[in-house]
Length: 161
Image (cartoon, rainbow, N blue to C red; front, side):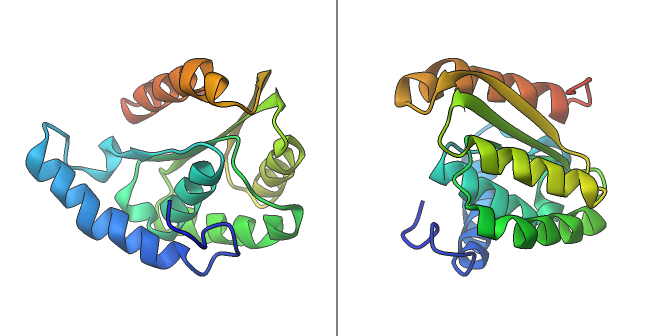
C-alpha cells in the first residue's frame, strides 16, 4: 500500500490506475487467472482493506467483488465513502460489497457506520462482525480464510450472503 493512503482519498485514483491498468493485466498475462471483471475480486486488511475499498469503488467496472477485513477508516470519512459507493454501484450494479470486522478491531464502530450508511443509501453490503483481535495472527488465519471463501462464493455467483 503506498504512503498517503491513510490521509484522505487523494491517492486512491493513482493506486486504482496502477492496480487495474498495470497489475491486473500482468497477472492475467503471467498466471492462469480468469480475465473478466466478474471473476475478479479485491480485498485487503486494515490499511490494505481501506485501499481495496477505495480502489474497488474508484474502478468498479474492473471487479465483481470488493471487500475489506478490518478496514482502516475514520468516522469523518463515512459520508464521502458512501457517496463513492453509490457512484460505483451506478457503474456496476452487480458489484458485491462486504465488510468484515471483529470484536477486537479498533475500526469496528466505523465499519458498522459505513455499512449503515451504505444501506441507507441503497447500496447492498454484507457486514460480518466476528470474534477476534486486530492482529496479524487473526488476519493471517481465520480472517483471511473467511474472506477468501466469501470471494470464492461471490465470484462464482453462489450465495455469498
